[in-house]
Amino acid sequence: MSSRDKILAAVALNQPGKVDLPDINFLKGTTGNHIEKFIEVLTSIGGKAIAVKSFDDIVAFVKQTTNPGDRVVSTFHEMSDVELINKYHGLPHDLQDIELAVIGAGLGVAENGAVWIKGDLLSQRVIPFICQHLAVILKKDEIVANMHDAYEKIGNEDYGFSTFIAGPSKTADIEQSLVLGAHGARTMTVFLIE
Image (tube, rainbow, N blue to C red):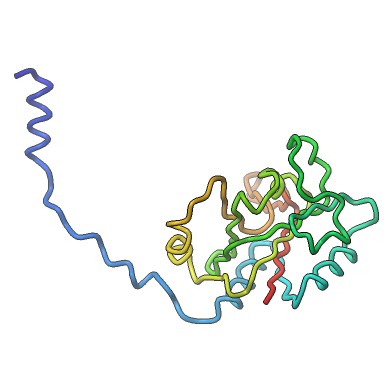
Protein backbone atom coordinates (compact mmCIF):
# COMPACT_ATOMS: atom_id res chain seq x y z
CA MET A 1 0.00 0.00 0.00
CA SER A 2 1.38 3.41 -1.01
CA SER A 3 1.72 6.35 1.37
CA ARG A 4 -1.15 8.05 -0.40
CA ASP A 5 -3.44 5.05 0.10
CA LYS A 6 -2.43 4.80 3.79
CA ILE A 7 -3.29 8.47 4.35
CA LEU A 8 -6.64 8.20 2.57
CA ALA A 9 -7.50 5.01 4.50
CA ALA A 10 -6.65 6.74 7.80
CA VAL A 11 -8.83 9.72 6.86
CA ALA A 12 -11.72 7.40 5.87
CA LEU A 13 -11.55 5.63 9.27
CA ASN A 14 -11.42 8.86 11.22
CA GLN A 15 -14.77 10.43 10.17
CA PRO A 16 -17.13 12.03 12.68
CA GLY A 17 -20.47 10.38 13.28
CA LYS A 18 -23.52 11.56 11.38
CA VAL A 19 -25.79 14.06 13.09
CA ASP A 20 -29.19 15.41 12.11
CA LEU A 21 -29.38 18.80 10.45
CA PRO A 22 -30.29 21.56 12.89
CA ASP A 23 -33.91 22.67 13.11
CA ILE A 24 -34.18 26.13 11.55
CA ASN A 25 -37.95 26.37 11.50
CA PHE A 26 -37.76 29.17 14.07
CA LEU A 27 -36.27 31.33 11.29
CA LYS A 28 -39.16 30.80 8.89
CA GLY A 29 -42.48 32.54 8.55
CA THR A 30 -42.28 35.28 11.12
CA THR A 31 -45.57 37.00 11.76
CA GLY A 32 -46.30 40.67 11.38
CA ASN A 33 -46.98 43.10 8.59
CA HIS A 34 -44.54 42.14 5.85
CA ILE A 35 -45.53 45.08 3.65
CA GLU A 36 -44.85 47.60 6.41
CA LYS A 37 -41.50 45.98 7.22
CA PHE A 38 -40.54 45.88 3.52
CA ILE A 39 -41.28 49.61 3.14
CA GLU A 40 -39.36 50.43 6.33
CA VAL A 41 -36.26 48.50 5.34
CA LEU A 42 -36.29 49.63 1.69
CA THR A 43 -36.50 53.25 2.84
CA SER A 44 -33.64 52.76 5.31
CA ILE A 45 -31.34 51.49 2.53
CA GLY A 46 -32.05 54.42 0.22
CA GLY A 47 -35.01 53.11 -1.78
CA LYS A 48 -38.56 54.36 -2.00
CA ALA A 49 -41.85 52.44 -1.90
CA ILE A 50 -45.09 53.76 -3.35
CA ALA A 51 -48.43 51.98 -2.99
CA VAL A 52 -50.44 52.14 -6.22
CA LYS A 53 -53.82 50.84 -7.27
CA SER A 54 -53.14 50.40 -10.99
CA PHE A 55 -50.70 50.96 -13.84
CA ASP A 56 -52.35 54.34 -14.43
CA ASP A 57 -50.80 55.54 -11.15
CA ILE A 58 -47.37 54.33 -12.31
CA VAL A 59 -47.73 55.99 -15.72
CA ALA A 60 -48.71 59.26 -13.98
CA PHE A 61 -45.64 59.01 -11.70
CA VAL A 62 -43.33 58.40 -14.68
CA LYS A 63 -44.77 61.36 -16.59
CA GLN A 64 -44.33 63.54 -13.51
CA THR A 65 -40.73 62.52 -12.78
CA THR A 66 -39.22 62.32 -16.27
CA ASN A 67 -38.58 64.94 -18.91
CA PRO A 68 -39.71 64.76 -22.54
CA GLY A 69 -37.01 62.94 -24.49
CA ASP A 70 -35.76 60.92 -21.51
CA ARG A 71 -35.22 57.31 -22.48
CA VAL A 72 -37.72 55.21 -20.53
CA VAL A 73 -37.85 51.44 -20.98
CA SER A 74 -40.25 48.87 -19.65
CA THR A 75 -41.28 45.29 -20.22
CA PHE A 76 -44.94 46.06 -19.46
CA HIS A 77 -47.30 46.84 -22.34
CA GLU A 78 -49.32 48.96 -19.87
CA MET A 79 -46.42 51.43 -19.91
CA SER A 80 -46.63 52.08 -23.68
CA ASP A 81 -47.77 55.70 -23.11
CA VAL A 82 -44.42 56.66 -21.57
CA GLU A 83 -41.84 54.19 -22.74
CA LEU A 84 -39.57 54.79 -25.68
CA ILE A 85 -38.57 51.15 -26.20
CA ASN A 86 -39.95 47.91 -24.87
CA LYS A 87 -38.65 44.47 -25.87
CA TYR A 88 -35.02 45.31 -26.65
CA HIS A 89 -32.74 42.56 -27.91
CA GLY A 90 -29.74 44.50 -29.24
CA LEU A 91 -26.36 45.09 -27.68
CA PRO A 92 -26.26 45.99 -23.97
CA HIS A 93 -24.01 48.98 -24.81
CA ASP A 94 -26.89 50.56 -26.75
CA LEU A 95 -28.80 50.87 -23.46
CA GLN A 96 -26.25 53.16 -21.79
CA ASP A 97 -28.50 56.24 -21.81
CA ILE A 98 -31.59 54.83 -20.09
CA GLU A 99 -33.01 57.38 -17.69
CA LEU A 100 -35.68 55.11 -16.18
CA ALA A 101 -36.29 51.37 -16.38
CA VAL A 102 -39.60 49.96 -15.18
CA ILE A 103 -39.37 46.22 -14.55
CA GLY A 104 -41.29 43.57 -12.65
CA ALA A 105 -40.28 41.51 -9.65
CA GLY A 106 -41.60 38.11 -8.71
CA LEU A 107 -40.89 38.37 -5.00
CA GLY A 108 -40.05 40.87 -2.27
CA VAL A 109 -38.25 40.18 1.03
CA ALA A 110 -39.32 42.18 4.09
CA GLU A 111 -36.17 41.61 6.19
CA ASN A 112 -33.81 43.26 3.71
CA GLY A 113 -36.00 45.20 1.26
CA ALA A 114 -34.80 43.10 -1.68
CA VAL A 115 -36.74 42.17 -4.79
CA TRP A 116 -36.25 39.00 -6.84
CA ILE A 117 -35.76 39.78 -10.54
CA LYS A 118 -35.96 36.86 -12.94
CA GLY A 119 -34.18 37.08 -16.25
CA ASP A 120 -37.29 36.10 -18.20
CA LEU A 121 -38.93 39.34 -16.97
CA LEU A 122 -36.16 41.36 -18.64
CA SER A 123 -35.50 41.89 -22.33
CA GLN A 124 -31.82 42.48 -21.52
CA ARG A 125 -30.25 41.48 -18.19
CA VAL A 126 -28.12 44.63 -17.94
CA ILE A 127 -31.17 46.95 -17.74
CA PRO A 128 -31.55 47.17 -13.93
CA PHE A 129 -27.84 47.94 -13.56
CA ILE A 130 -27.22 50.36 -16.42
CA CYS A 131 -30.20 52.68 -15.99
CA GLN A 132 -30.01 55.94 -14.04
CA HIS A 133 -33.23 55.25 -12.12
CA LEU A 134 -34.87 51.89 -11.49
CA ALA A 135 -38.58 51.33 -10.83
CA VAL A 136 -39.83 47.89 -9.87
CA ILE A 137 -43.44 46.72 -9.86
CA LEU A 138 -44.17 44.22 -7.10
CA LYS A 139 -47.47 42.68 -6.02
CA LYS A 140 -48.09 43.24 -2.32
CA ASP A 141 -49.00 39.59 -1.78
CA GLU A 142 -45.59 38.52 -3.13
CA ILE A 143 -43.70 39.88 -0.12
CA VAL A 144 -42.30 37.24 2.23
CA ALA A 145 -40.84 37.68 5.71
CA ASN A 146 -37.20 36.72 5.18
CA MET A 147 -34.64 35.09 2.91
CA HIS A 148 -35.44 31.64 4.29
CA ASP A 149 -39.01 32.04 3.04
CA ALA A 150 -37.76 33.50 -0.24
CA TYR A 151 -35.48 30.54 -0.96
CA GLU A 152 -38.25 28.18 0.09
CA LYS A 153 -40.43 29.78 -2.56
CA ILE A 154 -37.87 30.01 -5.40
CA GLY A 155 -35.80 26.93 -4.58
CA ASN A 156 -37.57 24.56 -6.95
CA GLU A 157 -38.13 27.02 -9.79
CA ASP A 158 -36.37 26.64 -13.10
CA TYR A 159 -34.65 29.88 -14.05
CA GLY A 160 -31.51 31.15 -15.73
CA PHE A 161 -30.22 34.58 -14.83
CA SER A 162 -31.93 35.97 -11.73
CA THR A 163 -30.89 38.26 -8.93
CA PHE A 164 -31.94 39.94 -5.72
CA ILE A 165 -31.70 43.74 -5.83
CA ALA A 166 -31.93 45.74 -2.60
CA GLY A 167 -32.19 49.49 -3.04
CA PRO A 168 -30.17 51.75 -5.30
CA SER A 169 -26.51 51.13 -6.01
CA LYS A 170 -24.37 52.25 -3.09
CA THR A 171 -20.91 52.10 -1.59
CA ALA A 172 -19.20 53.40 1.52
CA ASP A 173 -15.66 52.34 0.59
CA ILE A 174 -14.19 55.82 0.43
CA GLU A 175 -13.79 57.32 3.90
CA GLN A 176 -16.84 55.27 4.95
CA SER A 177 -19.10 57.91 3.44
CA LEU A 178 -22.26 56.47 1.85
CA VAL A 179 -22.62 57.26 -1.85
CA LEU A 180 -25.82 56.28 -3.66
CA GLY A 181 -25.68 55.46 -7.37
CA ALA A 182 -22.00 54.60 -7.24
CA HIS A 183 -21.98 51.95 -9.95
CA GLY A 184 -25.58 51.38 -10.93
CA ALA A 185 -29.04 52.87 -10.54
CA ARG A 186 -28.99 56.12 -8.55
CA THR A 187 -32.51 55.58 -7.25
CA MET A 188 -34.84 52.63 -6.78
CA THR A 189 -38.58 52.96 -6.46
CA VAL A 190 -40.77 49.95 -5.76
CA PHE A 191 -44.40 50.27 -6.79
CA LEU A 192 -46.47 48.05 -4.53
CA ILE A 193 -49.57 47.05 -6.47
CA GLU A 194 -52.65 45.13 -5.34
